[in-house]
Length: 256
Image (cartoon, rainbow, N blue to C red; front, side, top):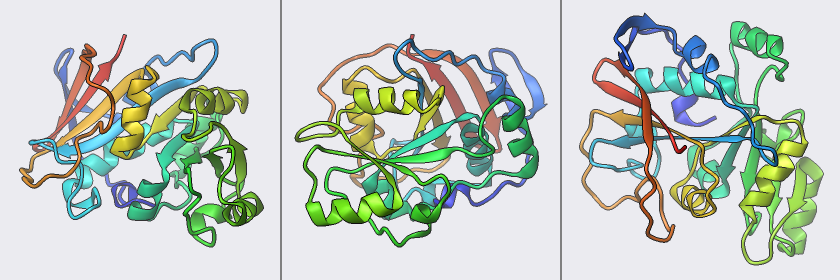
């Protein structure tokens, strides 16, 4: 489980936009948002935390940028997702495990016809993953999306512990990944990076919603931006909500 998901403590969150509301409940608020799936794929959210100057990590992981405030909203976002989509590098760096859900949140999910907790989907071209890690001891097992011809030895190990889908030649076809996830019944997918995966999702025109946590920190250095590797473009976003908790901001943008 990544560092950001480690805390569920309740702290006051104020809504600044579209109108000021004191002490909102992030879980109820994000659950009330409309996210209609597309005809051929689920709705895709992207959640990232950065420093005020745009750094996406501190010494390779997001933990140094996170806070109890961020982790509460992070848990609220996971609470609405059917599937969490993440790149293999992020799984390795952030030590992902099976998602955890508080009992009351699990009950709310079931009342919305969702599974009690989200399922994880990993994107990996090389299958360079620790298949003995707790993530691969989950039920149902994670979905694992790779290319048509991954290393045979790694493929055999992956198929023993994950639902493997081979999509794409040199690179995993992310549009087909989302269609495949949609066929499993998922309506909302939450992408959690890293920046290269975000760049591929942006380049394919798949992002519907950006949930951006702005940490009250200055990091310097040369860590990747939130979106890395996508061809230059200028997509306009629509700001629909701003939350504040302490000195941390939570911005919700829509892409259309």
